[in-house]
Image 1 (tube, rainbow, N blue to C red):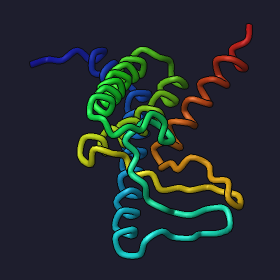
Image 2 (image 1 turned 180 degrees about the vertical axis):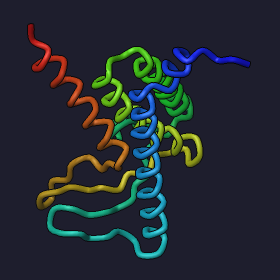
Image 3 (image 1 turned 135 degrees about the vertical axis):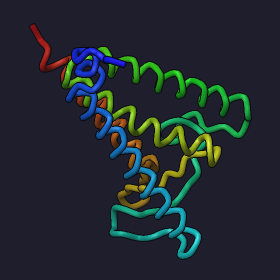
Length: 165
């Protein structure tokens, strides 16, 4: 079978390979940190890092930063399905966007896949990064949430500030 060279170049373009590497890197980094913190919590409990940071595992059944956490199955499955649709849409955007946006969407997709994996296999997402000042604690989050947030913030900056015409 003879595959046209332009089709091969289109399928395996440099930008798509970079996007795939970014997605895989984020997914693996997220998985390794979550596996590590779950094992650590089972053996040692929470870990005090300094006056502003603790690693303390909580199981999040909602969306980012624990929002919409509910015990009811209908909410959980609806949120999971919505996240699946977002993943499909992000995949579509990566195939249709320019180089810079491909990388930014890949940051978001890599994190979304990490959290979606947890929803499927644990029925909750392990969040463990606890940033605080005295008794004020920010939402507990994980590595996937960091990459999702970075991707979204950079997209907003790019679209609102850098694209002014």
